[in-house]
Length: 106
Image (tube, rainbow, N blue to C red; front, side):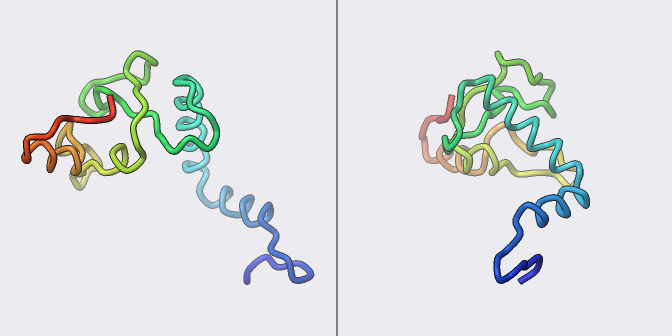
């Protein structure tokens, strides 16, 4: 196991080294946590702060454009190679829409 000290894994050292290699992920995590706090989502809540109108489609990060969404719905949007979204609907929502279901999460 990497980062072992006296038979115990050193998680703090592992986290520091990881964050040094990927500083953009630390910034992204801080932004996600800020949005969750603004919505009043507590630690351990399994929901994400999702955008009502996607930022890539002209939406903002304002509190009025955020709504709690399940993690699976919020992270399942189809993407183009450049990272932009293909649709306003997630894959799950699009499948439900084709079956005649309603959009959930807002």
